Image (tube, rainbow, N blue to C red; front, side, top):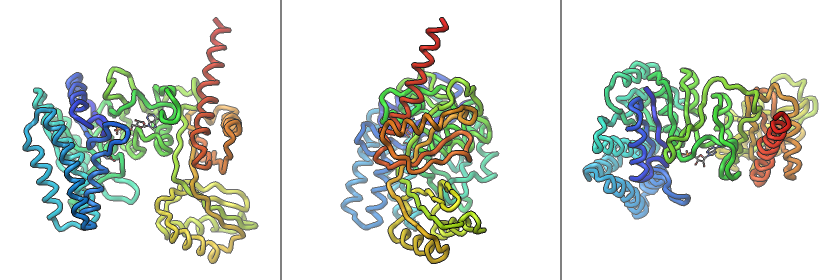
Length: 464
Ligand SMILES: Nc1ncnc2c1ncn2[C@@H]1O[C@H](COP(=O)(O)OP(=O)(O)O)[C@@H](O)[C@H]1O
Ligand SMILES: N[C@@H](CC(=O)OP(=O)(O)O)C(=O)O
């Protein structure tokens, strides 16, 4: 059996849901279906999840006029979907009732936000299951609690609890298509918890691993994972096969097409993942597996992400000071900031971290503590940093990749703030100014995918 997850763009309106139904109908082994909340229908549209967050926020701030307005937009979108699919309007009444019940429960602000956010995927699953029944497919909606999505709310990521596995495994025995909302599960104490943004991919992966599915299909709005973000380079090369490790590095650094946490369950149970397009289901998509032949392309993809900050410290004879690195990272730990990379030299060290939690107040505390406790010679902060990852299993065994990458930055007139290579065998990381991302990616893409392709074509011509 297969687990098929359909993202927000695949359930954004009635027409998309009809495509989803056709995909399910076309392959009876698609037994477990996971859906996101309706996403964007066009570029400047707003996802239902964002509307729900806005609704919960304005309600909590007691801006009731605003919250009512947002609720009307949310309900109109669900109503349009239900009407266009010719489904019973009682579904709409149920959504409204669930929202009202949540507002009247004695919930903390965070609990209420989670409960409201989850309504997007929950309603979507009810609608998709009703539509499948409507067109004669034996389908049923199932709440994540009944499906066995029990998670401990670990900081940073959702960890599946051991009691989940036997329950999830039983889904295999159900002789129907089971439609389960993505993006949320339940903690040990019965509390509803949502995952990080884009987290329906995680639900799909958990269910694929728990049912030991033959394949986890992740349906989205692109034909495949491309070698670079298609919004930066036009018509980039499609990737046919990727390893879990490669995808993890790429999604970490901005390939939002698949959530990096979603790789963990699939990787642990060695479930192959296929990224496919709801709008073009016959296209083969991208397979994510444990091994691939890396001889033909050493660099498989180049990802970029913004929102990083770098803290630089230098101190004469740092290398001889036992415990310096630990003390520096301890300050970050005390301030609840996780670090992403920590490249170092003999007398200097940088700590790279995501800047969303680094308020001016935190910046002041961290700098003061570093000066007072570590007695450094220099300390400085650089904001607006972007990270570029050049990724590929073949990197370790290929000579000259770093040279080609640095020369591409130089051709694009992009200054490299930092290079980190060595700890990961599958990636090379570069820190640059965020404003340089597009030209850096375009230049790297040209070097690793356009120039090498031309060389290969020329070599083939000579040989034939
Ligand atoms: N390298 C990449 N390959 C394919 N898509 C990418 C890549 N990097 C970013 N994306 C973006 O990921 C989007 C699909 O992910 P997402 O918006 O989460 O879809 P869904 O609505 O299915 O959850 C694509 O539309 C594309 O803009
Ligand atoms: N709806 C949630 C979860 C999710 O996975 O959505 P999508 O499939 O549209 O990325 C979000 O917007 O974060």
